[in-house]
Image 1 (tube, rainbow, N blue to C red):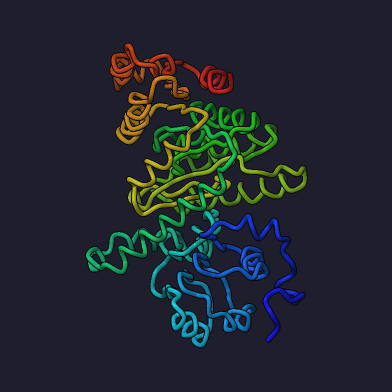
Image 2: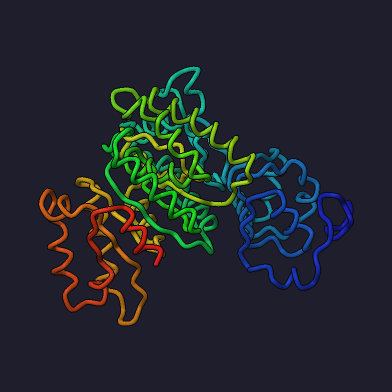
Length: 391
């Protein structure tokens, strides 16, 4: 068997500087990551191999015995390799059958992942709908193994989300799921999403319908001239009620056309991300996110969503869920250390936030004599909100 530092086509060469830069715990999520680890002929202790096909590397791994502390999360490997890894101290998590999701997934979802099969068999058969049913199955509610799988899945989502957003300025857009396509308010939210993305911000939403979809759509279109036609097509199915199928299908068609147009003009990069949850299974995810981090745990989802809004947060009119998000966002700002940066929090809709749901007076009272008080704003238009967030 050749040494691991041979010129084998799977291995290549690492420089001494690259070897020294390897951290003690290395996440291996792509074949390129695995090649880098193997060609460095470093101990495999501390390596986490996530959801990879190990068959091309089997002979190389069978020749290694420095496997104490190696963790293999799912993926594909032979029984011989699995036995060898365990014999030498590795922890091997098997691939899971019977679950509608891959708990070891190393990247965010795309719309096609969650809505696979919708045109042929309907929404109820899609991975998204089946994952919700799995999360609600009473027979599995106390199943420790299923609970573990969901927790691993959510941690994988968090890890993938962190990697995707690293180095980006993120602006959160919150708002109600009931906002319908074809309304002026929906178009305004989309226009704001486009303005933020064009200014280099990543638009982060709860990933659902309504105001969330509008903001993701605006960011997704790329060229502003494509927004109005997209809005017109989507308005033919204003809401996901009563039919998620029709609502999602027209959006998937619009998305496909936008992807083709963006491919022609070279619109690339991360422009928006959605973070929905199967906790609200009746709210389907919107398809216009550049990546979808969908969680089983709504608490983890809410915390992760708000904590990542480094560039500020704009809140469009909403109801109970939106109010919860406002105060969840305010709490860390209220207790922020003296001199710590406080990103802006902008509420849109004077009448809504002072009369319909009088959140604004409470925010002003909380902000008295606190640094975050100057960072909280109430405006009437999305144009004003965008100006504050981009100033």
